[in-house]
Amino acid sequence: MTRFLARVYWSLSRWKLVTRPAPDRPTILLGAPHTSNWDFVLMLAIAWRLRIDVRWLGKDSLFRGWRGPIMRKLGGIPVDRKNPSGLVDEVVVRITSGEVFSLVVTPDGTRKGHSYWKSGFYRISRETGMPVTLGYVDRTTMTTGLGPTLELTGDVPADMDKIREFYADKAGLRPEHKVEPRLREELAAAGTADAAV
Image (cartoon, rainbow, N blue to C red):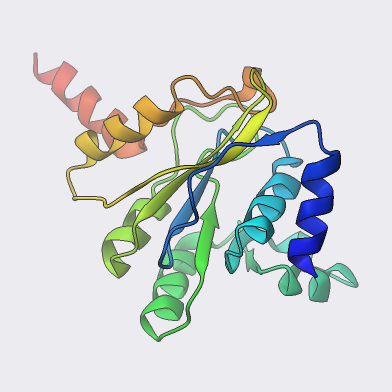
């Protein structure tokens, strides 16, 4: 049923699905640049079309009341933004205990004022051995889909350079809200290096 809905969506949508094949094993799917909540619709349409069993992280308010069962059925995992410290550990436990799924992560968020990506996806990848697949939205070409799948090495700057290279020409749905793919750890390291000069 979901694949049928995805076919209908792609036949009617102004967006064009331009994608590499789905990864052949569970992966962390980066959704970037994530500049609008409408990206959620595109993410589901991509996953359903490519038959990827996904889970995604959403603010806990989305799971209250009648919406809760629907959001969970769609693969949602609620996030308590007031106490997010245990989220990465919870996801790692789910994966290492044998639960099989691909995890959609939007490391840049949609709120204004961010100057860096959150690094939870990097830690989950390193602790579980899951690769990272670069999903994208590009309004300038009206295309969306999946890019390459990367094995993260632990060399943060080198890994992030590959990610930055891929997203350099991807504008997102609202280009004015795009955040450069850079982790806070990289910014902190750069600041330390500048101070030492």
